[in-house]
Amino acid sequence: MKWQILILLFYSLGILALEIFFGQDQVRYYVTDLKGDVLLYGINTTISTILLALIGFTWFLSYRHEKFDKSEKNLSMFFLLQSLIFCYLAVDERFMLHERIGYVLGIHDALPLLTIGLVELGVLIYFKQVGFSLKSNNRFLILAALGFVAMMVIDVFGASRGFLRLSAEDLTKLWAIFFLFRYALEFYNALNLKKANYPDI
Image (cartoon, rainbow, N blue to C red; front, top):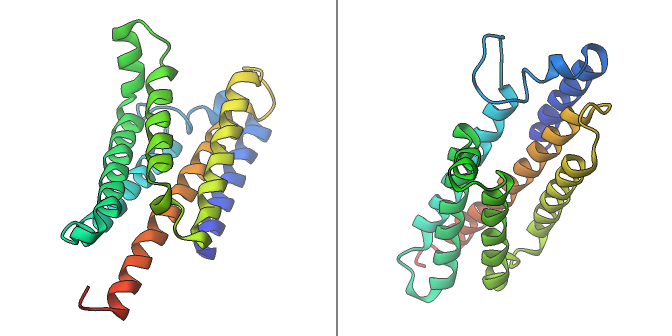
C-alpha cells in the first residue's frame, strides 16, 4: 500500500503546487469535467472515475466469491449493493449525472449525490456486522469519511476564490475515494485468504 500512497501524495503535491504558483484558473483545467483542449485536462476526474469503477468492480468480485454460499446471504447482499452504488458513482463522476438530474428535477445538483451518500450510509448501518467485521479495515472507512467531511466543509464554507480552495476540495475527495478503494480491496483480500485456508468453503 505504501507505493499507492506515495504516488497519490506526489500527485496531490503537484496539484497544490500548480495552484500555489499559477493560481486557481490554471489548476481548474485539471480538476474539472473531462472536456477541454489542455493536456491532461480533467485528470483528477479521470483518476477518481477510475478509482470508483475499481471499487465497484472489487465489490462485484467479492459478490461473485460469496453469492453461492447460502450461509452468507448478508455478506453477499452487502457486496452486491456496494458494487451497484459505486458503479453508479463512477458513471456519475464521468458524466455528471447529478447535475443533469438536478436540472431536470429543478433541485440543487448536490441533492442526488447526497441521496446516494445516505443510501450508502444506510447500507453500512444495516449491514454493520458485515461492514465493520474487519477491524483492521475500519481505519480506511474512517479516513474516507473524514475526507468527505473535509470536502463538504471546504465546499460549503470555503471562499470561491480562496487560497488552495479548488485543489483542497478535489484532493480531499480523491483521497476519500482512494481509502474507499482500500476498504473494498481489504474485504476481497480477506475472502481470498479464507478460501486459501479453507478451500472447501
